[in-house]
Length: 114
Image (cartoon, rainbow, N blue to C red; front, top):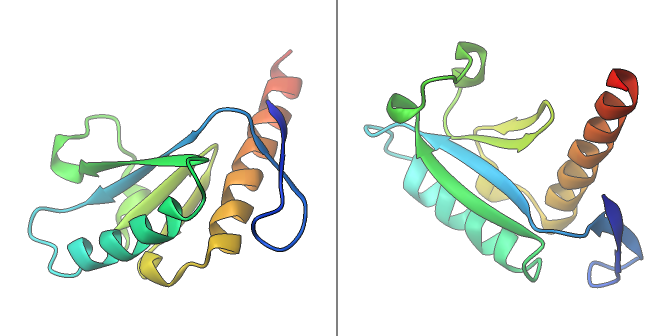
């Protein structure tokens, strides 16, 4: 799962081999969601394709747990790693840290289940 080294953020880090899908949940009537998502997308795009964003409307998602919805927008990196609210203020290092944390959580869950 982990295996590609990058140095574009100041120090060598291990990143997932394939792009990580980041789900962003928003509401149709959310006034701040478009600007927050736009700012977050700019930061993710600076990571040179290591992540891709999928924006979803909370009304269209069937299996979304309600505990995600305290503050919108909600960014779900997978494997229990989430960020809420002011996502546009996340720096590239924060985003990479969340991606790595999600990958590690996934590895731990796979090792426990086997």
